[in-house]
Image (cartoon, rainbow, N blue to C red):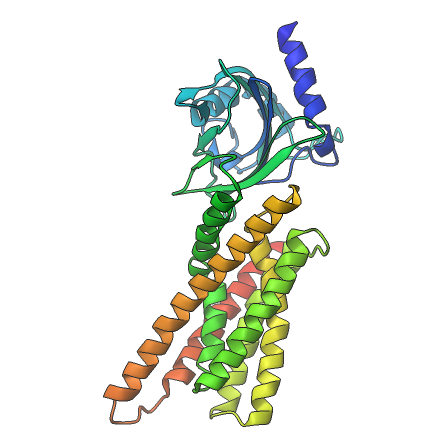
Length: 365
């Protein structure tokens, strides 16, 4: 009976997620109630071992039912919540398919509901997990944590990822801001598509006025759509955004090759406008890194401001390195190369961007 009551309580706490899918991929929720922590976690199939019988990277309902005990065991061994140095005691782990419409669709992740009890009310619970998948996009998990009564809830969003798989909750908004500065900087520096795009816009021409104009245009544009997407005002599917980002790299690189010279003032204005349009697209891509933001307004602002600041820091670091290399090349190179560095960089960007575009469109064919 206690086990059944625990399941019913967990279901009631997370009833808001019970739509076509119980929980989006790469996301989780934590709800603190008195001395208990309730979780709903999406776990990629590729993060589990010994449960995918046919090795296709997907689990059928039969496979989930057959390996429920093993999935529970692996989850409890790799998903830990602690408070004041003491780990919570797991009293319930329940595994389900994310599809709750009765279909037999095979899925690439499962939903795990889990309850952990503490000896005292947890104030700053610390979560650690390595339940990250090996497929593209599965190396991170967005967790929305909530505690308090319905009339005075406090909510926080955290992003766990490979290399940063531990987070302590409810330390304040300044800590949230600092954490997402790191996340934003890592996202831009580890994102080859965004770096390639930045490369195509800075090698197009020389001059601080041009560089400041295009970089500012890109920054303002992606900040607008990042905010709109993060606050749920505008939603664009990744199946459109990701190929579009790759296409923007190809377009800008080909325009660089076509121009093959320093821009005049009127073409500089046109380039800034084009970069702004592409920046709107990239902002939607950035928003995918912070996941859903169903949190209070203060935490939303701290999360978004920190992430955006991190993007700008990473962007500044990358562009500084590129411009220093360009300046050194101009200073110490006395013979004009047969092929300008800007043309070589644009050709490389066009080829890599085209490869990204094909790779992002081909799976949908």
